[in-house]
Amino acid sequence: MEIVKKYLNRNLFYISVVITGLTSLFIGIFYSLLKDNTFEVSADKFLEGTGVLGAYITESTGRPSETNFFMIGLIISILFFFIISFVLSKFLNKKFIYIFNLFSILNVILIFGLICSCLFISISFIFSYIFLIIILILYLFVLYFVLDKILKLDLKNRLISLLIFVVPFIIILIIFKLFV
Image (spheres, rainbow, N blue to C red):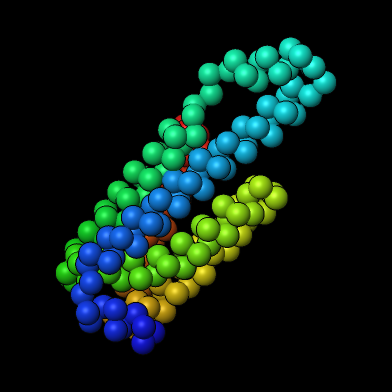
């Protein structure tokens, strides 16, 4: 908690933007790797035993490139962190930069989790996805304690703040699953 307090007191917005950019970069990389591996596994299962025809169909399908998935993940995550910071700053009556700095220092947890998930994805994309969900739960616990210890919010405001963070995140995951 002391590290977070020191970081917030120094008001290092430019470093927060870099950390958020790195988080978004790794989210984009993870999303493109996850979509790529998911497609490959599905295509292999579907085309299993079709020989040359299966190889031709796999090569000729017009699947979206990894760059498209990367850009989608990157843009959505940048917008997510800026919008959530803005909404929470209005809800908590705090400065936007203060809340943004708070999220960015906590994003170091996400960066670690995303790097590990990207490395694990070649072993098992399911294991990688589960590892990332565990890291996200850890992130939410740390966020909860930071809201308690640093911002000194009561229980109701802490829970509402977590809902403001979690509900859009779940909506984004559902949209990704359904449409992208």
